Length: 265
Length: 254
Image (tube, rainbow over all chains, first blue to last red; front, side):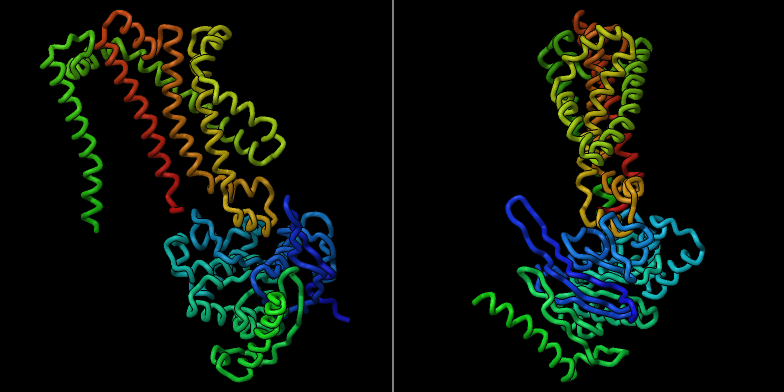
C-alpha cells in the first residue's frame, strides 16, 4: 500500500493554563495522500488551526503521532530538513514591515541557507505568477491587503515545499479579493500538485477548492466527518451557483448546525 | 496637501524660535525694569555675551564634558543592548539579573558618585563610569521592552522556518525592537548628560559641572548661567543627533 503523505495517528493536544485544561484537539486521526488538496472546516475554537500548527511543529502534541512520508515527527524539535518540506501561510500576511515585498518573499531562502541560483530564480517566478513583480520593491505598508496576502502565500512556496499549510489565509479579505485568490491557489495547485491543507470557516470556499473536506466540531475539538467533494477540476467560480454545489455545501452546514443545536439543548 | 506639509514644517522651526525670542525678551525686560542685580538673575544678553567672551576659558571644560558623555554613552550602547538581548533570550539570566538592574536604576546615581570617586579618584574615568551606569540601564530597559513586545506571529514565522537563535535575533527580534531601542538611546542621551554633570558637581575641577559650582560659589551667576546654557546645548546636541540617526535607520512604518 502507498504510504500517505501526511498521517495523524490519535493526536491529542491539551492546552493547560493555570485555571483549566482545554482540549483543543482530541483523538485526531486522518491520512492525506500526496498531491491532495484537502480542507478542514469547523466553527471557531474547533482546533482546526491547531491541527496544522501541530504538523508544522509550532506546538508539540500532548499525545499521538504525526508522520510525513511515513516518518514520525518524534519528540525533538523538527529539523530544518523536515520543516523545509512545508510552507505555512498565516491568517494575516505576517510580512516584516522593514523588508520589501521581494525581500519578504525571499526570507525563507535565507533562513534555510538556500544559495542555489535556481532557488533564487524562483523568487521572481513566484512574484510574476501572482502579479507582484511590478511592486516587488515596495514595502508591505505601501500595497493593498490582497497584495500582501499574495506575498504571504508565495513566501510559503519559495523554498519549494511539498506541503502547503494554509491557516484561513483569505478570511480577512473582501469577497472579491477572496474569490480571486481562491482561483489563484487552485491554479497553483493544478500546476505544482503540492499537497495542500487549507483551513477555513467558510464552507463554500472549502467546497470550491478541495478534493476532501474534514469537518471538525468544538468542545472538545474533534473530527466528526470526512466528505469527498465530487466536483470536477478545473473548478470555476460559477460552480458555486450549481445545485450540486449548493446541496453539498448545505449538507456540511447542516452537519455542523445539528451539532451546535445539540450543544445548546 | 504638499503646501500644508511645507507650512507645518516651516511652522515647526519658526514657532519654537519665536517662543525662544519671546521668553528671552520678557526675561530681559523683567531684569531691566526691576533693576535686578546680575548676581541674582543676569539678563539673557549678559549671559550670551559671557558665553562668547569666556568661550576660550570654558572650551576645555565643554570639550571634557562632551568627551565624558560621548565615551560613557558609546560604551553603554553595546553593553545595554547585549544585556537586554541576553536577558530576554535566556529566562534564567533574566531571573538572576533583573533585580540587580532594577536596584541600580532605582538607586539615585548621585549617591553612588562619592563612592566611585573614593575607589577610582577624581579623574575622567570615574565620570565616564557614572555616565555608563546611568545610560546602559536605561538602554537595557527600553531594549528589553522592545525585544519582549515582538508580535507572537513573527516568532511563529521563525519557528516554521526552523530559525536558530541568532537568525531569530537578526531577522525579527532586532528590527522589531529597533524603535524601542532608539527610544532608549534618546532617553539615555538625556540622562547621560545629567549623570555627567552630577559627577562633575561632586568632585574634580574639570567639566562644565565643576565650573557651574565654582562660579556659583563666587556669586558669578552670569558665568554660571553661561555654563548651564552650554550644558543645554550639549544635551540638545546628543538628543537630536540620536533622533536624526533614528530617522535614517528606521525608514519603515510600523
